[in-house]
Image (tube, rainbow, N blue to C red):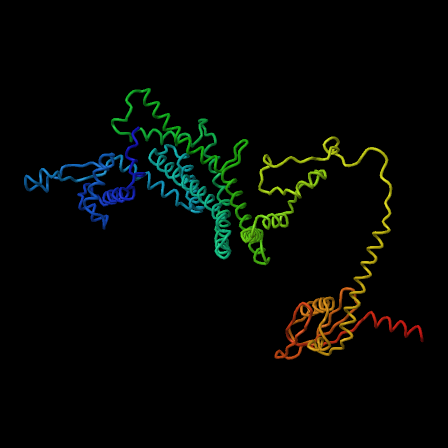
Length: 526
């Protein structure tokens, strides 16, 4: 088969050719068969006549258009030799445009769940059942009812398939716009629930009508078989003279093909509404798919609500991490960020020997070096041989940890002494205001860190009003009460690391440890 008429679809000037062909299709819809180049130019608008003429000539070469001499405009010998033509669309060109229109329509088709189609199927099945019970069913009515039934059922099945496919695509694309998706969800769920109710109500009656038409009659033939045979026989009478078979065998073959086509339509209807052995009805599968889509919609709404309540989500975290990677100054920073974020550290189950470790320190190997080009690495022989770090023989002798315990105790005592010194420095200042803390000099590093921790805890516990706030250190040794002064006040705390400025507060600092000791001493003396 020659597919040359499709050449203009992928040609260099495809847009121009498509406009010209659509002009001929539109003209034919208005019962205009022949068009002159000037007529086509008028429909295209801004195109030059020479460009339109060249496109018409090329389309004639491909077989999309036919050209005939336009003798009606010949008024002189010069006009005759100018070869004026009129053009009309060919059957091949019309078929190509019809195929392209169908292609565009199917791609943009949204589909629908047609509740009205269910009622139409029900009405035609009732009419078929009443016709089958008559003494002499009319062949014309049989063919018309079966044709309408096949058309309505085909639209129902195709639209349902297109709707479910489009719904799945919408579920994937609506995730980005939360407000639009929530509005879309409300409409779709109501639409699906309404169709599911109609489908559940109509499926039972439709299935019963199909079973009745498939049942045995008095002569042992299903009522629908007689109607299908009448429709097939009536098709043979509509064939054109050149296609009408005169021979008996040819006529029987044509009748068999027509009957199989009508029987296939009926089998498709049965498969849609009746369960088959080992196969569920398509209507049941459609209900399951629609219910599953409603569940997916509700799950997506839950995810959107959760995302709105949470400060971030996984995608936002990964985008932030990607931005951090872009901000890294070198590969070393990027590797450290990678290990911190994902915890993928080098393998620890292989132990190298001392010589390899010293060589690595003297001559570092960049991380970008391929393993095939890197120097060799010596692994402990015991790991290669046995896969164990333990030597054979008795267990090692117990080690005395007294030195380590003494060092740890001394470190804890020093930290406790530093904490008491910091508390004592804040208490001995006797400051009634935050601005009075540095009247006797700068705070040392330990006292300043303790003050910062207390200020941070107090400001975090504040309710935003001018009420006093009390906070205590983690070890319960110091308590501080802050009472905010006027917003115009200010306080500056001088330390060895710099100065801290802010709003001034009334200050009360109590050493709870010293107070407890004094109370115990007083109780003992008493």
